Amino acid sequence: MCGMTESLSVCCPACRREHLYTAPSFPCVCGATVTPALDRHGTATAVTHAVGAEDWMSLRCAVCGRRDEWPYPELGCPCGTVLRVPVTGGTTAPDTTGTAGGTRTAGPGTRRPRFPPVAIRTARDAVTAAALYLRWLGYRDLRRADQRPPSGVGLAARGLLAQVDPTVRPASLRDVECLWLTAMTESAVCVYFSLAGYAGDARARADDLGVPLFVLDLTGTAQPVNSLADELDGGTLR
Image 1 (tube, rainbow, N blue to C red):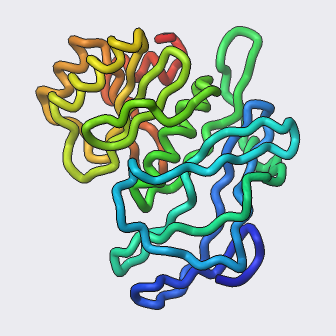
Image 2 (image 1 turned 180 degrees about the vertical axis):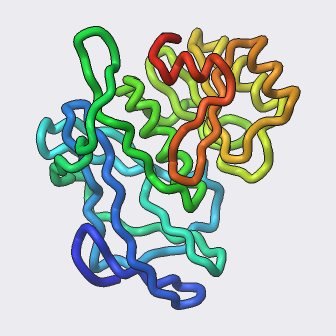
């Protein structure tokens, strides 16, 4: 691996293809964006276990000093190998370009930056996109959920439980019901993110239970599937 800190040439250990990888930027509560420092002396490694079992990295904003957890950077190779890109520590540099392009009203008298999507190429990217979206909505204390869901990855914040399903199968009725039951035991609202959409009975049951459903498109944007998701996206559900 060689090159500048922000953009590096990454070699796939399986097929030896070279890829140019640029680290994603994440929004901090203070308004600055932070970017993980890529390790130009490190080596990309193949990810061989499920996305839910992987650790996250702790990144510190150089502007306000706040630490947040984000998924480790990953890169998908055309040969089918998923690569973890090494980073150096958790301190990040401020980047003010993330707020370019305008702001969006978040409530009376306040404004928030335009949502910064992250292109989805791997399962880890899907988790990153969902975490970005929830923090953009205002769930600043987002973290990994204490209980791992039956499928996908669990995210939690104060009063919220989310499930991210990065598989290629539509989420089932059981998936939705399990998320709702877990959220009920924790006195939290819940939200579901899926890459492959939802079975018809899962959508109907989500409406009955009050579960917002989103589909993550490949640009990393969360698209509302039901009216509850529309309300959450518009800031009227909380």
